[in-house]
Length: 65
Length: 260
Image 1 (cartoon, one colour):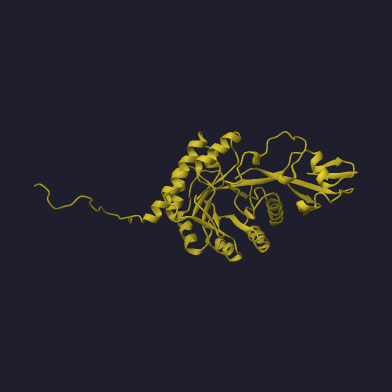
Image 2 (cartoon, helix red, strand yellow; image 1 turned 180 degrees about the vertical axis):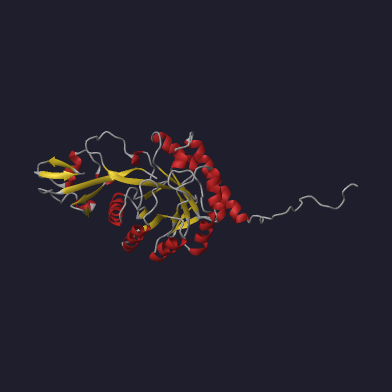
């Protein structure tokens, strides 16, 4: 199915947000996730299944002033 | 530090250091870590950006920051609307360990001056959502008062444009702001060298925040130490009560007993 991740199109098999982060090699404790423009609390990562057309923003802290 | 009975208090939290530093623009992580250490800062700003999905080998900033030692202050750099700034703060709170945020809503790419109208809108929403808001703003006492009225934990007027190194361009406005608000006044942006930081503190400001002034120096670690000392010296001088400025001289040696 097709989703958008950080502005880019991606084709993935159905899976949970947590599994997707693991697949991407991302430490869930170090990021914040927005699903369809709403903050997804960390507690919901395991139970939230990604659906066709979902839009994900995955952000983390970087150097800045 | 000898000045430990003069802590900086923001939203009920106490800090020994009145210097806050950014984590951007360093040559590499080791230089950043060494500079932050030399600065003595306890509050460090970070930016919130998309994870690079395709390049997973990149080191992460938090690999190099001891979160037990430093308080992170996520910023909303790059946001030009209240909506984007609010979204960024919510993401930052979710990613981080606290609800301290440096709220920036920019109005112009060349000057990076704040869009105060959007800033006030964002501040109102964020304070209601329980964030501890430290807003980057212009050296305008009226806007500072409005930010305080909305419930911001401090005000952070710019000394000069971000990264410009021009110092405190309007010290008189800074003094008026200090008279206008009761929350801490932290000069944020424009500091170029140690004397700029000392001047901010001598005016009575409660703290100074800088990034480029340190990271952009030829020797950032040395400059970080200079800024550390300048902020402490300026604060000590302010509390020591300077002599007044006079047009004419006032001799330091006695007039009596002169040979004739």
